[in-house]
Image (cartoon, rainbow, N blue to C red; front, side, top):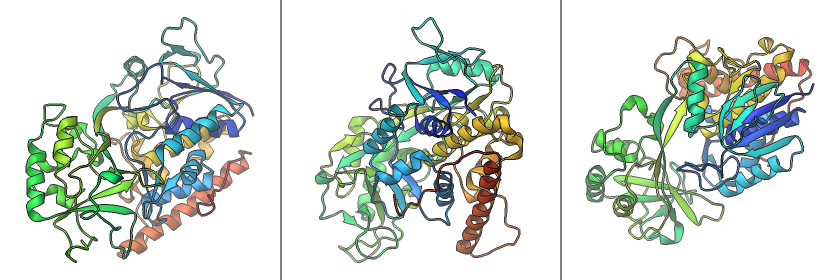
Length: 470
């Protein structure tokens, strides 16, 4: 089978979809607005640029994030393989050198004969699936058999307006956040110590410990610091996992100590005791030359970030490679727009329209990659009878799709994979570790059946990938 697919957006979801469809034999036209149109958070024009954290979360198989990575490995995800090839030390998590990662994805796309990368801002789509670019009178990417919209959380105003028109629903916008990054050699290593939670010996994280007095001074200044947006955030408009650290502190003076600054599982070698609070810093590159302030998404002005965050013990002379920034996140009301193949249900185009990534209402890096892979398989298998190969809800991403595309879900907010949205086990297991392992085992069985069904249709999936060999 051959097909022509237009993909809007060369982020994580769009890049994965493009590479996977090319692997399946499709001809892909991939549209990316950068560098013709930049965003407040992107720093370059490479594909699959990570703009927030450089962590792709836990690798532990018995975690929800680990289950999702198991699916990416089993299905042969191109971007998951790239992440493994460019990983940096981060304990039990998968973290990457963000520049090397995005550059490797860009090379793979630009060197693929089946992918044409077009730079320009997409402002709308025509009824036949062809693409209208800003400043161009003629459409691009004609004769499309399907379209995947993966324009991301920073979808341009023009394209967002077109999307509102064709879905009949308003897209929702809220503020997301990126944490600051500091140079390693500007940290005071007589105060900062290396340790991972609950692990003995040298760990992958740096930790800046607070005494009670140091914490109280920091929290007081944090709450009173000047913000870019001078209003309180509305809870319904802000995804809880990306709340700015100052907003967490406003919920209660000690709230950060039970959130991003929790000291549990850490021992300050200077005192031999658990600190009152602790900031963890995670390596941004393989050589450990820069570190991300974990959980410190912020809406403070740049001068205030420098002043307040230098009150953290060990960061008194910190040099900031990047200050934290806030940005808009645009996404559709997935429960009323999409089905579990990520296809737009009420589609006015004459060709199938799919969505993937954060604009489709999912949250998280691996979730975006997985959604791009899922959209690619959906596009390719639809003519073969997609209704017969629905992704089982027992899988990690299948559970997310079941939740995100359930019409009964109201006031929808972006979600990442977690055990709370998975179908309960038939047998109740009280032990949490054993329960999570049972979820993972059940998910692996369901994924195996899904792969077999796709294989029966003649769909040559890529993979599997062995993380230990990457």
